[in-house]
Length: 196
Image (cartoon, rainbow, N blue to C red; front, side, top):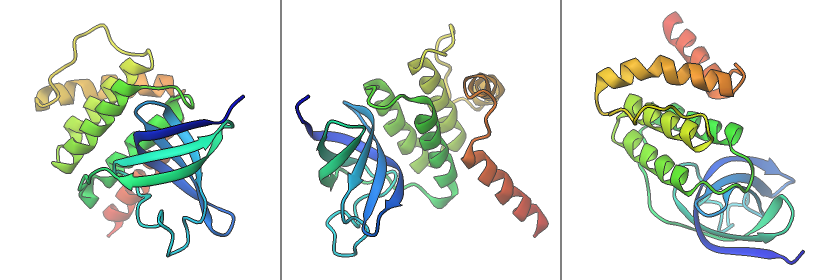
């Protein structure tokens, strides 16, 4: 198998963990290749060209090489900025977690990539409930668990209210009632807020 090299793909880093002393392993959702796992060598070092670029919710122009499931990052540049307020970060992380849990590696979902980008824009505009229902609807449709109905108008609060439990139930079925980490953290935050 020859070495594949992808250049000028656009993507978002969904999650990253430290690897060895100086590097990072990141899960990146790209438009053309889907969910890709890359190693950014030296990214933890302050002088690294990757250090200030690899952040969640920042559109990236990215290239990598490799034939295994773990690719090597070749280059990355920012491709814009989506200013998500701290009040909506948990919702954005929730979307990231859904992608990580429900998409297969390197299975392209160009439409879902656009829906994810639109969702981040809605979150940046403070339209939290609209953004989440919109994303859940399109994610379920993309992975084959959609609804026969036409897409509701999620800018209508009444539609958001009606569809929230329906979408939650369908996601619970698909996730086999697994509690998402973002939901768990949100429950803990809510408990702390109530105790103050």
